[in-house]
Image (cartoon, rainbow, N blue to C red; front, side):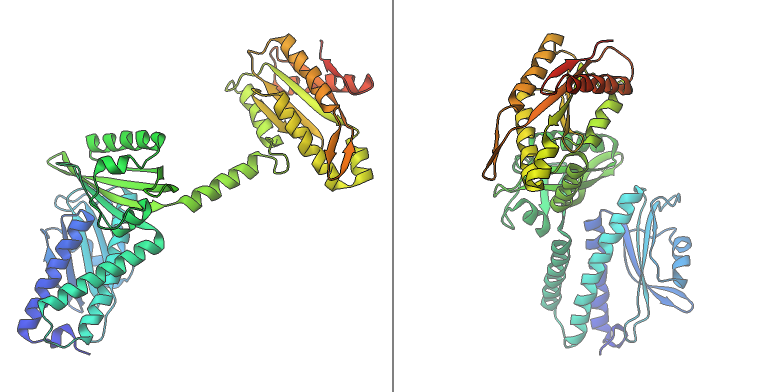
Length: 438
């Protein structure tokens, strides 16, 4: 295998020039001022190629000569170098281990510093594959060969981005021109290499996400800072997706001139989070709120974050006999029907919840007149009397309802009053409603 040191002087010179050009492209891609590649020799570092000013790097690079772990410093506090990232590259064949240093006179947020180092690592992985291909090629490689390897490097980078569903974007603030990698085109389902404009991109955001994104972008531009948020989009093909958008503003003399960052498809992550939240707050069988969400509303009442006018507790009469006689399948169907009737009767209620096996609760807003609350309770009793026809059987149930109007005090007081009223309805023969009276 041919190594860099074994190349003829002319070929070695061309290779050094090519590495310097790659470092400059890496700087442009990551939005940093400079990069340096050095051989880690026993007597110290020997610079192979560099891009940008290099003052003040020695103190930051020294710890990396004895470790293979990357070093990321968001703000080094030095005059010439604030942000620094050092990545050790393992030895290959006769070539010694190398150190890639990335630096900029401006600090970065810890999150963006780590992101820049991660992107550099991906680019280096692709560049390593390209370099191995070059070593297999004949020593007389031409400039055209380097161009072909650059295309392959980009393809490998795009494949890595596609696997992680990540794309890189940048916007020139002078004319709002956009540059996307293939990952962003695929995320928005826009044909690759299609000329894109900012107006076209904004049209693919939902209204709420567009307003949130524009506000975050405006603050970042005004303060020359970073931003990150989750946005919902509707792709060019009509697919709804969620993406995580990160951006960093690059400035010159305190004036923002470019924004760049990443866009990542997080649709599956978002759906999983929504599903987890639904399972935590809703009853899977009936679709009603569960006891946890009901209790959260009572807690909000105690904390002054929510106003409640009245609480209705509904208990199905005769449900245990149905379960014991016909089995749980029929019982479950009765519960689903009861939930549908309760939702229909309590249209506009603040919350309708299943809080037990055959127990339900209804929270009404403060604007509901007391007489309307009592009429609603009687209506629930009436609608629950109707026969239930499910799975080839027609059954009869009933309901007892306890009503408590909120007149101050704690949520425990309100629940206890509604429970006492429910007990009174059952004591009166069931299939009835009662209102708590002090």
